[in-house]
Length: 97
Image (tube, rainbow, N blue to C red; front, side, top):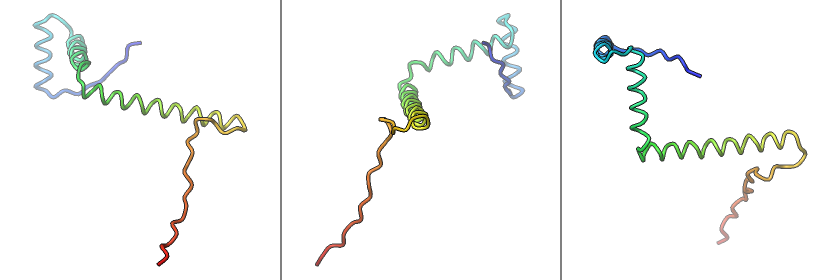
């Protein structure tokens, strides 16, 4: 489903984009859509961006696992198998001298 997007352009950029659209015989909307598409396509092979996306994907998966564990805990009497276990804290004994 198409989404509507409002953007703000300074006067100079708007004038240049409008002129470019007129010269190319396309609407300003089509010019902007094409520019965004070209930019997105150029970033698909960026290794730094791919690494960031992988980090986001891992966070999404961790969040989903936590939510699934919460639902499982909420509707069952058993602790979920995926619930993280917290290590017990032990008090450090003072050194005997």
